[in-house]
Length: 281
Ligand SMILES: C[S@@+](CC[C@H](N)C(=O)[O-])C[C@H]1O[C@@H](n2cnc3c(N)ncnc32)[C@H](O)[C@@H]1O
Image (cartoon, rainbow, N blue to C red; front, side, top):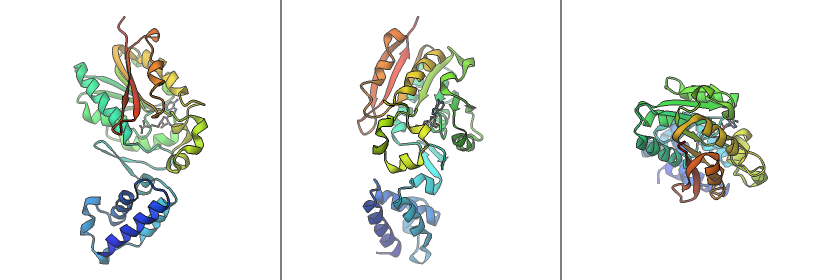
């Protein structure tokens, strides 16, 4: 066994003992980070190159600091984003929400689809849609100034139009013109604070996580915003907690002007996002 392999094995055990959910992956990612290589290139690092800073970053991860805060980067679909204190770290489950949205926009066969991302955080969703939907016009809004420091860095040079403000009142100039509204809003019930993983509870901003007693406060407001922004036949897609699949589609009720409300699972087959179409007049 070469030295690096032995160190990674030892680090994996330490992370596992600390309750880190993916200890091997994180131990390898951090070794790659410290040595300035990709994870798949670790075999090329020689024993003599072993960098003692590895144990410093392992100690931080052991204390449940998110991997992405330590490395300063998060991967989302085809993007590498900058993240850190003040901004929500994008999660893999949101990738399938974006995948659904891309299929929905393609099926519309609109030449220059207009897309709005409400609560954009790092900009992950908006940037992925701008990258993967050719000729789309993508708009994004975020309330938190701390988060926006990161959003602006990530969106530099992109064609996403970013605004600061409250998602509930955003983009009055686009009323009735939007083809797709997408959001991964805060949705954790305040009552579940103590069950949230330390990486999220202690490092993601509260504004990104919690939304009222039942977690649905902002989603209820976003329903009105989406209805205002969408053209008739336009589509909304909203991420939610895996316990909310029985509730969120009902917020997009027929009597409120919606059709085809449905819920969808993520890649782990857990309820993850609701979709609906703005009814035609
Ligand atoms: C769960 S995070 C999602 C961030 C990003 N969309 C993603 O998927 O990685 C929710 C985001 O909503 C923002 N937010 C919360 N309330 C908001 C509001 N009323 N208007 C705009 N943004 C809001 C938070 O600051 C946070 O960045």
